[in-house]
Length: 359
Image (cartoon, rainbow, N blue to C red; front, side, top):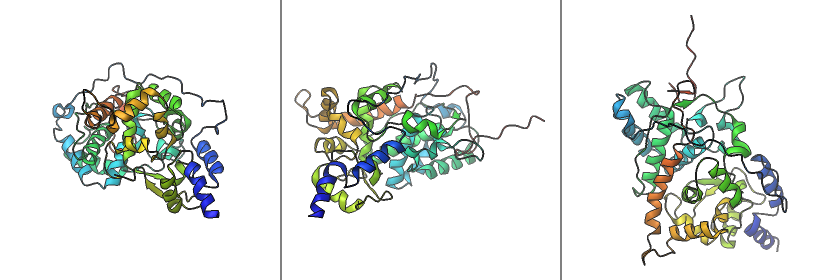
């Protein structure tokens, strides 16, 4: 009887302690627990794009480092599937905080505020070692030329290409500088969309970065890869059979250290299975399930899942691969730094360059 009760509760909110877990999840992300009739505070719009981003495809061919992209590609190719999934998430988490400037890579410096990588949403980031390997190889080949911000952009593209079985491929405009500011306080409840967000909140957070509703739906498809901690999806309306499986894997009470695939069907493939999972309630996050709560976003979900005809043909799945590349390029323009007063080419991706000795 107790087991059946636990299963029934998990199917809706993941366990008999789901209320406590939900409250903990909201507070960890810097949000108050939900209250009936009270929407989440929406972020203030911010200038998302540089007025003159000055990015260029093939940028490093003119900078005496024509092999820059192939060096990054080689580093990504040798990564594990989990690390490749992490590289896509790493690019997203970088661009949404301080812009696409590699600020997410900066490590803690004694006596200074915690950097982005120590913010709760970033504690599970993966792939940093791949970026370091690429940077080391680039510094050996052409020192002081390739920014860590551009390495992140290239790596996100190459990981997408690999995990989609070459279905996603796009040119990456480059020429970004690396930022010098990184604050964990800018991640919590401010810039990174939380997993429990409703449609209004998620749309507003994307719009604040210059990304529209279609970009939001398209980029959310990255949840077809990677893993999630068991304590991160206690508010999602999970399908009962999947709920039972999660119950057995995550334990009761939930083991926060345990992780599960975000897509149980094709966990290592960046594909449109994510949209089919939304339709069948096989998604872990409220922010995914909420994409069916408006006619506009539901139409996109159905289209990419292959359930809507266009001129009598199911174009949706093929279109998504192209749209994902376009959305990644668009996201790559968020908060770009070109001014040497704002950014630099870091010698090491995890640390700002030492200040020159004035004497």
